[in-house]
Amino acid sequence: MNQPVIVLVRPQLGENIGKAARAMLNFGLTELRLVSPRDGWPNPSAGPAAAGADVVLEKAAVFETLADAVADCAHVYATTVRKRGVSKPVLTPEQAARDIAAAPARSALVFGPERSGLDTDDVALARAIVTVPINPDFGSINLAQAVILCAYEWSKHADLVQPTIEERLPPAPQADLEGMIAQLEAMLEPRGYFEPPARAGATRRTLRSMLTKPGWNHLELRTFRGVLSSLERTPGSRLPPRARRVRAEQD
Image 1 (spheres, rainbow, N blue to C red):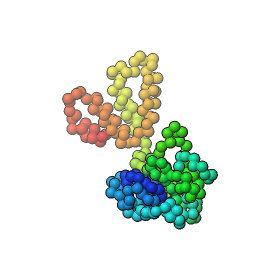
Image 2 (image 1 turned 180 degrees about the horizontal axis):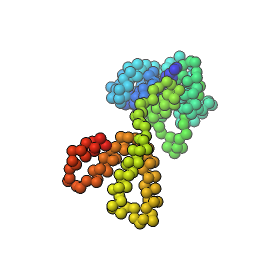
Image 3 (image 1 turned 30 degrees about the vertical axis):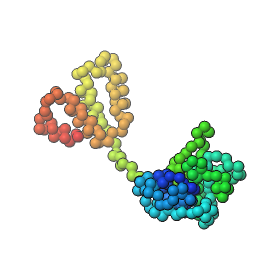
Image 4 (image 1 turned 60 degrees about the horizontal axis):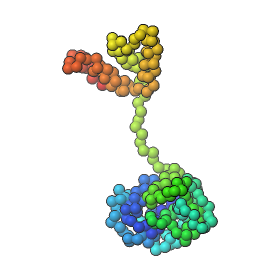
């Protein structure tokens, strides 16, 4: 994939540069360019805030002007939530990411200073504006948040690996489920749970419906039956050896 360049214009705090680098690397972006960072570069505060995204910080390039920073990019997108008196196409991060992924030439996503954002001259260099629907009474997105919004949308078009999802065991056989239900009913019967007799059938059906919804796997059933076996015992009593073996198998 032709990764977009992330350009931070006149960033003020090293911590925010580090957080932006962290946001970038989460979604596979590694090329960071800085335009006249207020406190110079490198900045000792950036490393801890990057939380391990050192490869992004180490490769970061510094430029005096935005024009220099995007000189090799054919498609430049200015991120802003304000109207700047310039007439340009306005895109969402999703639309911009789609265009970037399809573009044969290099693209740049440009972000402004933390306090004021991009000024009109900065926006004038861009081909399009990228913005998001936002609360009109509070349009304040911090630098790393803005970067992660755009980086995430771009990542949908990249060949990133989905984090491993825990493998789910298959549902237990019906016979095992019947055994658990029978064990529970046998414990409830002498305690009068199914009284009055006229409601016993409906109560059993409701109980069965509740117990069949989760789609238990065999380990869950064995664990729950172990719980039931523990509840059957008199407090303080110990199981005989054979029963302990059965309990161990259930657990």
